[in-house]
Length: 296
Image 1 (cartoon, rainbow, N blue to C red):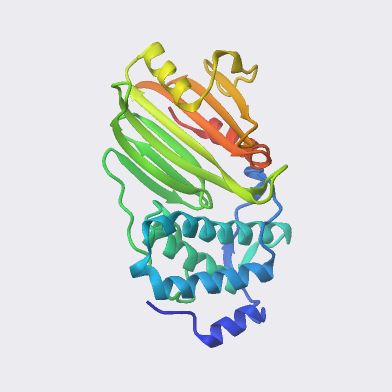
Image 2 (cartoon, rainbow, N blue to C red):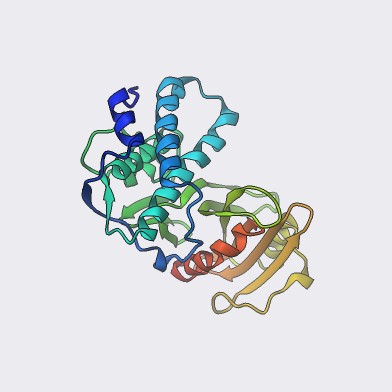
């Protein structure tokens, strides 16, 4: 694996690379999560170079408990680049941002993030220190990319999730849950936002759950209990027709939990949306957009 050269690092950190590429950043207004970047442009430069060079030296020896924090750092850089670009009203990414985006998505593919290899291919131009590694999903799942949106779908469940490329695709699998039902699960992380009441920042998480057939209370009761939601948490919000939404707040962990039940063409669906106080509110409009775009 190659590190950024000393010359590349100096150029980046000195902000000497300023020419624009022909790539267009996706307008955040369509996915209106909090638009304030966590990292400043200078912090993006430092962290992107450090991450790239550290991964180039250590990718073969990374321990399993290191993988998730590294993924989060990679997507924090991606998130901040996109938001900085939007705040600057720039139509194009600079060459340095294009280099960083391609590098970060390439490294995400090495860490197994589905779709990151597809997104990387969009950012052409200057060579990056590492090429992407293909990330394959098990059947019946498939993931496609048409800038600026990823589309994750299941041929068995006849559903599709559509979301912007800077959202991180997580665990996607089919299995038999403890309620005895065949189950498909897909996890997606939103953009970053700062917490309220406690230090730090994080992504909110969307968990899509599907079970074939009409399983009524068996499906509903199992996931209500699993998420920690009660009947009394019912919300007046109706995110889609023929749906029921429950919202609860865990004050001990500063965590909001939202659970919506739907019925798709081939079975029962539950969608869980969770986030720390602050992160939850900042990304909820994007979550509603996600729900509206979902094909079931």
